[in-house]
Amino acid sequence: MPPSLLLQHAPCARPTAKRTASLFSAAVLASKDGGGARPPRPRPRGKPRFSRQSAIRKSFQQEQVVFSTPVSPDPTVAVIGGGASGLACASALAARGVRSVVFDTGMHGLGGRMATRAVDDERQLVFDHAAQFFTASDERFQKLVEEWVERGLVREWRGSIGELEAGGHFRPIHSSTPRYIGVNGMRPLADAMLPENDLIKVIRPSWISKLEPFNGLWRLFENEKPRGQYDAIVIAHNGKCANRLLSTSGLPQLTKQMKRLELSSVWALLAAFEGPFPIPHNNSYGTFEGAFVRGVDSLSWMANNTRKLFPFETDRPECWTFFSTASYGRRNKVPQENIPNATAEKVQREMLGGVELALGLSKGSLQLPFYTRVQLWGAALPMNTPGVPCIFDPQGRAGICGDWLTGSSIEAAVLSGISLGDHVADYFASCGERPEEFAIGLDDSLNRVEGHDIGQFPGLDSSQKPQVAEAQLTATI
Ligand SMILES: Cc1cc2nc3c(=O)[nH]c(=O)nc-3n(C[C@H](O)[C@H](O)[C@H](O)COP(=O)(O)OP(=O)(O)OC[C@H]3O[C@@H](n4cnc5c(N)ncnc54)[C@H](O)[C@@H]3O)c2cc1C
Image (tube, rainbow, N blue to C red; front, side):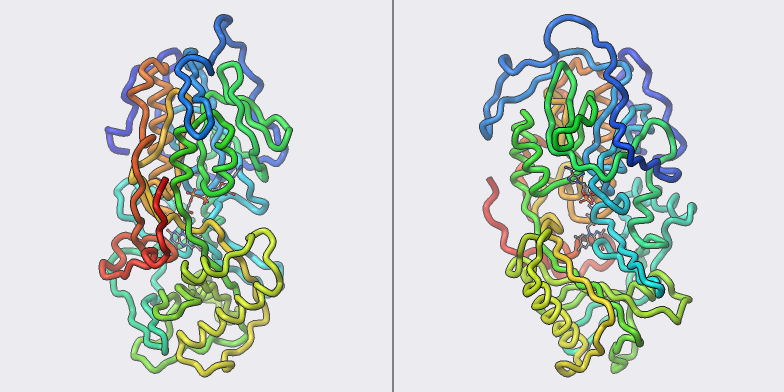
């Protein structure tokens, strides 16, 4: 961690703990008991802890919440979202001695868009069905990745990847930049990211539906069920869910920034094939394991999970992940929780047709997969970004972290989480006495994100064609 991110203020009542040796170091402590936060601590008597009258600022029909009491000596932060950014934020807070509770909706594990599906089949079908691989350009992230490699959570993906032009013309990407994958997929990596210590508690599956300032603390609810009281909150997710949660929160500045975010939609087709996949050998590079597809409307990426994750197990069926382009996703968007059968069938047909087109196979000649699953990532990747490491509203004691604050990658998400965790710890250490010094990212305008339809891979290939630009960016608010 660079010195600029270290504690900059003398602790007020309770010294922030020394940093642990590493941000992430052992298995996650998941809890399904719904235990929520520790019981509320006794508070000093006196004036109400926040004011809706003074310092009221109206924006988006919301009054700004202003917390005016001293920060607790032993604060707890609620982190809403257990994707890469939320996990990084909780870890950074713990490294500074600050408690947190991470809430996540994940039924099968943490990770959000670091998602791996293991199909309950005796042949063990495994698919990374969102994030595929990542690169590491920032020194802080590189250190973390090295640590993950040492712990056996991550390894380099050395299989051939490249660009596949419609018609079966494959050009490998030659780059010295290492490409990383979760050894058992992305979700197992996310599940093992948190340090094993009693400063972090995980509650999942849990969908936080309401935030309410009360008596100097934030109260959280899942439907009507109380989920504890917290000194500060972190919104570590985005899209419709976050807009809904923020809309009645009393945090108009965070609401405004979140509403400015525009997200692409991407269809995923998971398909398992009995025999080896018919990758054309009409080039000198042999087979490939992953390809950014060019010139096919229904396809932007295809990858062989079996070769990627189990390179030495040759008797497994081939499990492929195919992603559509963002423009195809936009034109074929439906409610992702309730995809009509007819749409799923059409998308599957068109994406498999796209695979034939990309590989230069004749129509209908591709062997039929014995397993398929179609999924829409309705809020897939950010199309615009404020370009700030995190957002924090010190008056409302609330912040936002996530990939979209600087880009569209796991690296961007992790760095944003670390930045916000450190920022909140600094704010606590200042006793909340100079809130104005801690406001960050509340007014920055958003600019277009460049990159592939499935995100950014810094250092991989400077000649990458920006694909997100295809998806029309409407004017920001
Ligand atoms: C199709 C696709 C392919 C991609 N490929 C790559 C790739 O190859 N490489 C790469 O680097 N990046 C890739 N990405 C991007 C990468 O996955 C993201 O940038 C990163 O995982 C985002 O992390 P996050 O923490 O910001 O958000 P998320 O991962 O979205 O985490 C947010 C979490 O919050 C939870 N949540 C939401 N609302 C609530 C609530 N009310 N209460 C509790 N929990 C809630 C969500 O369920 C989720 O688990 C891809 C993304 C997609 C969609």
